[in-house]
Length: 67
Image (cartoon, rainbow, N blue to C red; front, side, top):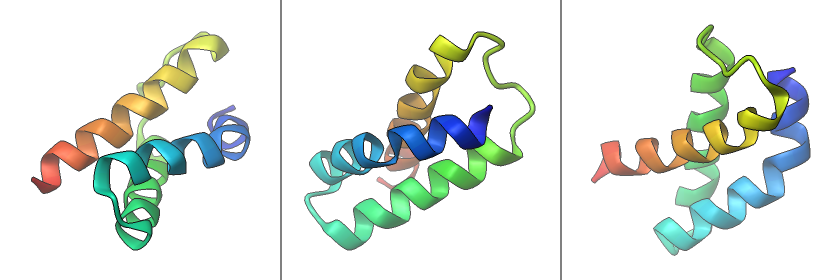
């Protein structure tokens, strides 16, 4: 379920990360960090429609953690 959400939202997550970082390499790293955290987290939302927002929250929190 998380894997499917990552695949279907990868471009949107990257676009969001690019707006946050203003750097394509940093945005790619940020999305990779998001994917690792999401795949390693067993606390994913139970409803599929909530997973997308959860992924964007992870990207934002990863960005905050680096600043």
